[in-house]
Image (cartoon, rainbow over all chains, first blue to last red; front, side, top):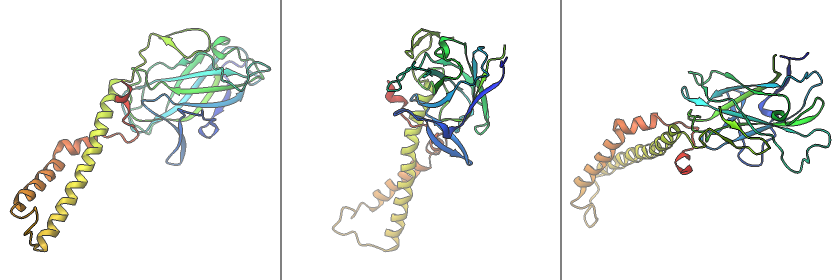
Amino acid sequence: MAAGDTLLIFAPLQNEAPSSAYATIDLRNLHFVLDFDDTTEEAAVFSGILPRNYGGSGITIYIHYAMSSAESGDVIWTAAVERIGDGQQDIDSDGFASSQSSGAITVPGTSGLVDICTIAFTDGAQMDSLAVGESFRFKVTRDADNASDTATGDAELLAIEIRETAS
Amino acid sequence: MPLYLGGKAHFYIGESKMVADTKKCQTLINLCAEAAETLESIASQLSTYRDIYVALSIDPTGTALYGNEVLVSTWIDKVQAAADDPVTTGLIAAKVPTHRAMALEEE
């Protein structure tokens, strides 16, 4: 029923930064961005509730990013879901499911241009078995220490859209 | 595509967890560029001080400069030449400010 629908949107100022190795907030021409280092894996974390119109087709996240200066090379993003749910996750600890990867994405040829790449999660284990109406956290990481992430300089996250995967 | 293993651990097989060579190269470039910027600054400073020294007609008698003024001036010229070298300016131009120059420390 909701396949293809936008479920949630996250912006840089909604980041609930991890205690270490976190993406840092920055401004680019008054656009808030989160800077992800090119050598050390850094992450940003967002909280949400899976909307009631989710129909069980899995989710696809759309990562809107630009590069600080790179105009060549590839970047790799990974993302993971942590189901908090109803009596599922003790929030004194973290419980993210396995990360899913975007694979190597060629960065735009102009550093200020925004590219949109996707990561798909199938319903179930990849989404940490998250169900509608349950709260969750969503962690986005630049896979900076992956040999296939070759673009130098920061990657700047502008926005994330979570859609139900279109069937 | 990497093979993702089950459970909540973040590990997978099939991709090399190693910083790309492009970033290791950029680290060396950035470190050299920082030194090149320092060299440019020092060369400019030395030339300025030499001009001041010459303008004041200072007597070097009794100092380490006595009899060595030409040698020191030639050395300053060499520093300036190194600062003006295309390699120096090229390294500075190739610096990526947001790269933290840590990629060689990962090894």
